[in-house]
Image 1 (cartoon, one colour):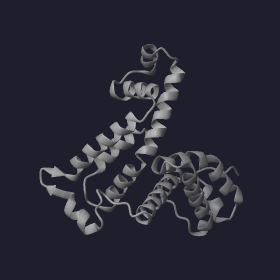
Image 2: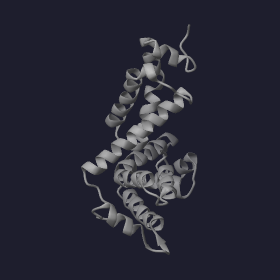
Image 3: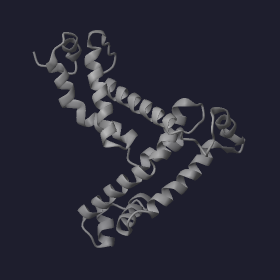
Image 4: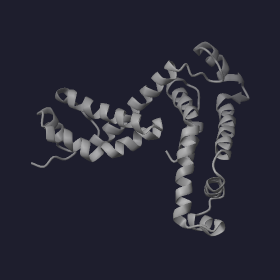
Length: 214
């Protein structure tokens, strides 16, 4: 019988190695892309995905999935990626605005009622993005600004810059890659705040994820 997402749990619980290979072959590349969106690191993304897939094999006898296999895998990868970010955050003693402990952070959340953390973070995010864009090469920066801030199509950018559409795509891809690296720490802090507190940073986080095409 052919292995599918619908019957794979039965095969896994029976210890069929073909079921393990099915998951690896079908989902490995996609899951690595999901993990990289959180970690901005190819090697760590691959490690996270491998851990998730191997863990499924280790717990196969008691595996109980109530959603689709794809949804289960994506959620598992996201959770493991976030756990890694939390551990890295703690290990490196990353702080928000140089605040040293949770008590200080809580007191900082709402300095004044009219200035909630969300607005402060948005301002900092805008500044961080502007700095990161300024650090791009001239051609890369021009193409990216036209695309992101002026909603110009690749064809329009190519015509204005006197380059090919493929070159425009190359510049945009490089810009996003560079920005993801430069804004990695900021993204990590927002992710941690969004999952460990009641502070409304979701909007700012979503804006950053959308801006970086994550």
